[in-house]
Amino acid sequence: MEDSDETRAIDEAGDEAEAREAHQAAWRLLEKPDRSDAETATMIGAAHAHLAASGKTGGPVAAQRGNWLVARAYIAAGLIEPAMEFARRTMDLTREHQAALADFDLAFAKEIAARAWALGGNPLRAREHYDGARRLGEAISDDGDRAEFFRQFAGGPWFGLDEEAT
Image (cartoon, rainbow, N blue to C red; front, side, top):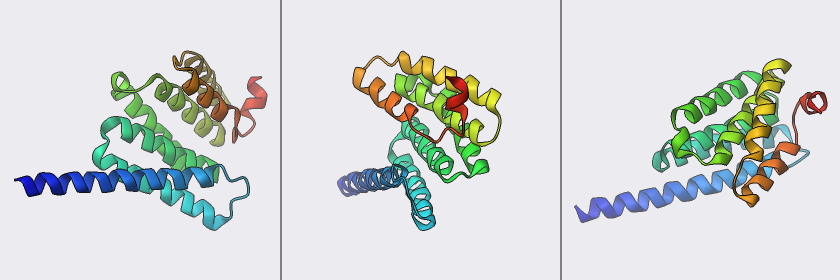
């Protein structure tokens, strides 16, 4: 029995390290302004790897955040259908597990929905989520979390929505 517990702990530590490395790789490329097509594909793959690895040990919070990252990668790549799908998954997980999520998770869920709708060409739905994300962002209790939310919220891509909303 001890061996299986020890093996499970080692496997979980490996999954957590893999998730962390994939998360960092995806973000490095998300924040790179002049990604090549190959780097964009790597970014999407890293986001999916993060979701798969974190999903093994992280439960619904990790699943919500992982789906958000995959949606964000597809949005950055300009791929409408998968962006919409993973934004929908993020919103579904947010509704289902709201009590387990941090206040910033709620704001980021609305933010990703807004970006996906904007990419998809539906400015009315996008603006609804954009305004909701801004309201939820203002309600984030931790100053550092709130600042990070608005740092990301201020960045692109918004596909023209941010210009319409101001």
